[in-house]
Length: 327
Image 1: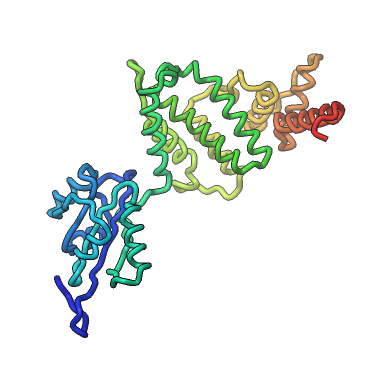
Image 2 (image 1 turned 90 degrees about the vertical axis):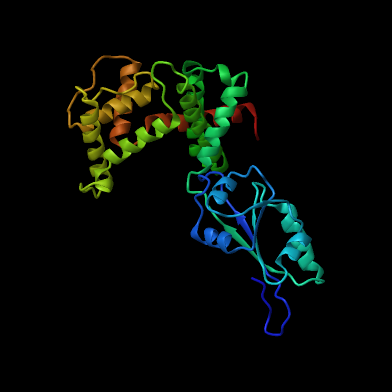
């Protein structure tokens, strides 16, 4: 495939740096990547254990296991040849730096340089990294390897509250971090569940379950139903949820161990959504007064827990001001 320019001088050739994602199954490469590999005069790879190599060789691509320098590549491209370098996980920084130095020197005619992504990360691909990291931590960390669902339960609550705090504070960096901490709890519990002898399940089962639920409860998105308002969407959700759970009461499934104001508001919401006109208990006492306030807040579209937290923060600030703290 040697070539010359119209003036008769050899053309400098072409270097293709082929990058792949370890989050995509080996061998699943883009069509331009396969074309470049099949048309190349030489294919090089510095990593003999690169996961793509068995699939390239199975496809009839001859790959030389070598780590070329920038000067080696220029020599290999002489005469218009094309060399494809299958990049390692680090992306070949030494090689690209060497090529940049040669190009900046002005002493040599550089080949055409092309960066060709052969596979891409899909949205959510970094979740695979999290699963792999969690798997190793579970196997090798003295603390993590001993944890149980019950032992981790308190951390799930703590992380959820920290997430709510980040949302209420409007702190974007904290929000990103706290979402990660909540996600860790999900992956950690799923990893522990894999070891159960009687009823094991994995993070894929967790994801599959929620995907099925979301599709089923959104017939206006994935089916023929119609919903044009948030209220209609909520009706779809409650109707399909009731059919799934086969519940006898609208109160079934309401967790009774949640904070009291949230529990009261949830019960009031369930009753209102079911168009049940149920008078509040007429007994006396602070608890019943709080129940009435929570029901009133829910009917007005106010989260009583969030409202009380906001008031409590204002009270905290007043206490600090009285102490002369933070002035």
